Image (cartoon, rainbow, N blue to C red; front, side):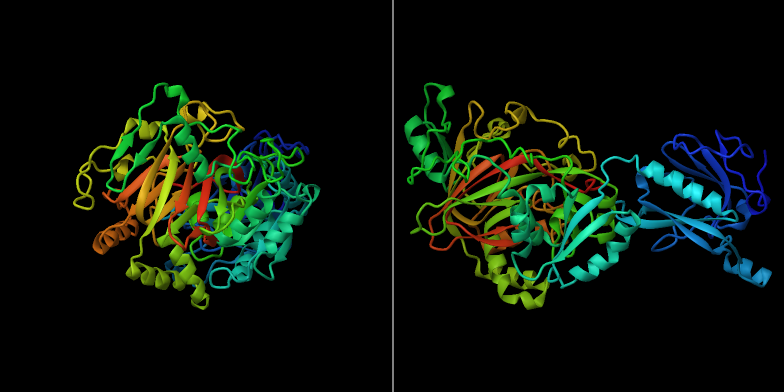
Length: 627
């Protein structure tokens, strides 16, 4: 049966099962709904509601140029289908003007007038489209439909809402923290930009604008579990450091897990077992003999530090590695979200692929989810003269010493400069070219066993002959990542609650010397200064840290390394003075007086520390970057 404009102007029909012109539909959300409507700036369309979305069919394509209006700019091409998974809201707008087909300038000149509109009842469907030039960038799209009959519009709104209510995982109630001083002090403006998205999606938000450093940490620490359970998640409007503050406030009082071994535990264990690997400053690895491989240096619950506190004990003194039964971790229901307003926003770049606040807000209201590895960092001693006092912090992106710590410390003097302070501080630190003597121990994994270190000759003399993986060979983390969604052979040997060092046959390797920097990347850490990140093929949730040790080298070679970091498709790890190890845990001891670390953009003083990673410990409102 043919449908024309009169069908919705004089005698509107809503039909089921595709029978246009049939009986009025029932309230069942599973039945097919079809109507002839006017789509703003496009013209007459037949709109059909199916089980998984809306389909559109043009009735007269001669009067439109194939474009419609979006929330930011015109959508480039007429959309024939709108999935409910991409729709975040629908609203009835009441009676008013709705524009007819968009006309080109030549048509307007020929006809002597612009396209005219009609007065009718209207409803709007809010969705998004991916940018053609930047697939990670999501652009708001608004589809406004008109009809002369009020009940027709209300029926469509009710049926679309009923379908949206069936979408699982979407938040209903969120706790939002805004850092007004993040980045260029744009936290409030950023939230004002995205707040309408949450309103259209009918997501309730409790907004807290922080008044001082540590405000969000205090709120999260003091919040009762029952209170937090009333929310579907916590949103940070700010940068990586602000998210780190919220994350630590949540985990420190709720994540019950054993400490990683301290540096002294590794030394004592090596002495007892007589089996260790030691990497000397010249790059060679020597291995002590061992009569029984099963007795390689494993750390048991009987290993104690000098204070008598078992390293495997939790902060409250218990040895229970299970979680608080009131707030189990990882939690499928409780998620974190970040709306970028910081200086680098590396976590958002790695989890969404862009620093766009609109894209992040859409990921949140649509209930997207990725799991994120979290590193537990334990400081044993602040200075060489300090007593051993375990102090725990968590990191989601990066922990760095040497150059990285010096830059963050130097930048604190120039906060008034905004994000530019990092470039200025980085230049000053680079020119100083300071190296620090330290020792790092890390767990040997299968990748280390498969690629034993060989004699390399004189350090700094040349680039490695064996180049690392080419850009085309990198297994980059992406949406629905196969690496993050599967368990490696190494990870499958461990129980879900076990620590990285509790599996049979664990061995520790040690590396000692002068380092320009020591860093542990939990994710790739892509940002505007390093488009591929510190480690291009690091993943969001594979249960490993990427340990990067940059040994002392000539100034020119270090500059070459840094320029490779700043280059798309660069090879910053393929230098003789760069050590890269994939490991679930490591320990660190400084031999100098000063020891400053950078934890997710925050200062952290530590002379001795240990770190271990917990795979997929928290969930984020994100879908992973498109490639």
